[in-house]
Image 1 (cartoon, helix red, strand yellow):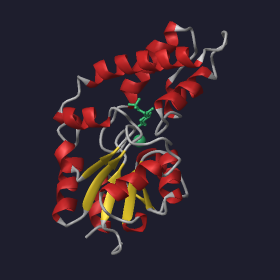
Image 2: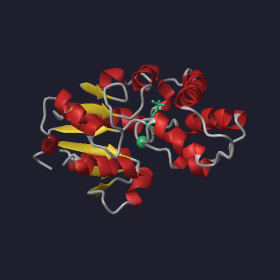
Image 3: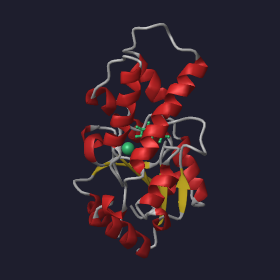
Image 4: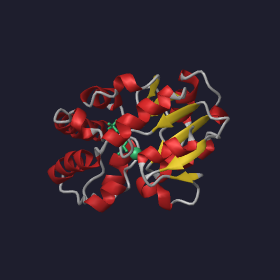
Length: 214
Ligand code: BG6
Ligand code: MG
């Protein structure tokens, strides 16, 4: 790992756990249009952009297809509900394991960035008091193509002033592991993504990063 100078972290499912808030907000939106939605469908939305998530949900919608404007209104409505739920987040939503590991990696000289598809990433990082733990933040507000496209990670690397080959990515989603590989980066999996054979390193817990990055 001695060529690695920067580590880029996915947010949802790696640093914090917002899946359930996404679920509750999408569920409310889906119920309002009588569209079937459950936690299994919600799991397919990990790492997927807001509008692409809506398209996946609407695969179960049996009514007259929505126009582009109507779809934007549905996504907006979901996001308003989601943002309200995010307000409940506090620094206690970040584990000691995550907080201490990030601090130690920085102490060891690694540059750290967030690489998240979410347009709410900065709001979440502020809520949980993690915003100052990173040298850069690449998120849904600075990309046109969502994971599995590597754009969010390539921007993260460039915000850190590093080449992609000098960066590792930590991800919990298959789409994120694909994005890291497409960007020519070391792909490290945690959680669900550890069952994906494309990941280069599998973590049992977040602090295992300290075993690889000395
Ligand atoms: C990702 C989540 O981090 O962000 C996805 O894993 C979500 O589930 C995506 O759809 C976009 O989030 P937001 O906050 O911009 O709607
Ligand atoms: Mg994730």
